[in-house]
Image (cartoon, rainbow over all chains, first blue to last red; front, side, top):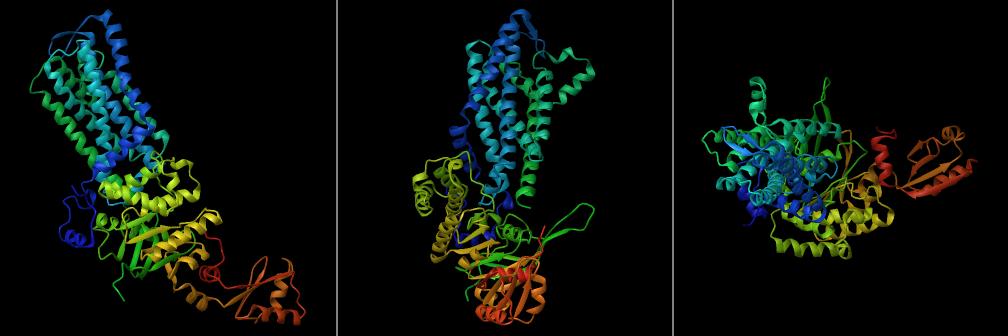
Length: 279
Length: 313
């Protein structure tokens, strides 16, 4: 593949046939991803390790430790499973969310405000959508690594109750994509560290209350609707259904929720990067 | 004359301001740059130089007027134009998470260039920027001059037809500036078109074939450095000091000396074709300055004449 480097004669040719996304996208997101991969390898490897072990610690302490006191829990469709098997898929979804959020918020905020990295990228032939997709893809790649590792741990502990658990991998990618895309969009509007703190303020309660550690049915009906509106709930339910093997067509609603999130996030991010760096 | 590589016609950029009328950063600028030419935008801070550079660099859209870069309209063909430009921004935006050589490799890939070609070019450019022995160093460990040279090397990774330099030597010590000028001069010799902004007069005199003086978003004058000095200054300038209490009084007695007399709080400038002659006239009239200096007129004189002596904030 030759990429977008243009000689004067190809400039004239492309002047006649502009790209489908105009100046927003030139199809070179992979170079942004490659940059991130190199940077992660040399400076951020510790962050990668901590992101990998954190959910495993949760699983061991709460799933196995606390789970010994709790015993069996009822899932949404009424099946009884062990407490560890109940929270493991939720932790998997949370790991995907956290990985994606770290890469797409703090990381992006720093690159935008201090390192001026995107300014440099956008003075090359890259378009803002190349930058957004490249950064998000890297977040997804990291999410995929975490998820694979975590699923292996679950397998070793006997917490995958069905072969459908393999489908949890693409599901986790979808969840990570949704959070990364919205996370980057929100971050692109942030100007100060204080504003960045709001992200944590939203994430923590979502982590605790999205039917992560207990079934949705413990809430009164009104509260249940609120929880069901949150993105993490959809992720938790989707992954839990897959690892416990309770498949039904209703799961597609969760998928749709994330597809919408991804599209909204990408549109906002691209628009914002364009406004910031290509005014 | 070959077709210009940059042509602006009544270029305007304004930004909306809340509850007030728009802020006009660039207010109807027109100029052309020929291939291989070295062209300067000279002006005080806030004159609209960087904004003009950003529009030409296809990272900012114009409010009105015409702009043509390498035969294309930046509003529609941003990526095509940017693939042919090298950009050296006012503040270095090197990738601090990558090593020196990696900065060049990764940047080349942003242009979609083949890996092998980028690697070859990176080594040539490290040599050119006198950074070959720093290839594996961290960017943060480089000196200011080295960072600047790396930024210029990075801007050359795609063999650009035009190099845009926004205040290339601001903040560098004299040695570092001279090394940088030497490198830029070599590029010019190789036929690269240079467009640079600066507020250093000596830099403009060193590097620019032609320049425009910009103030408050408008062009005040255009020409070669020598041309502008001829038009807006005299050949020489005599600087005399009588002490700050005496200057004003003396000034009254030397009106009519040279082509023009400029009274500053600390000294008096006499613009003349012969500074020595004016100095002799002064002694003959019984005026003996504490210090005197005859120097060649510079762009600085032109610049101050055109943009005024008041501090621009």
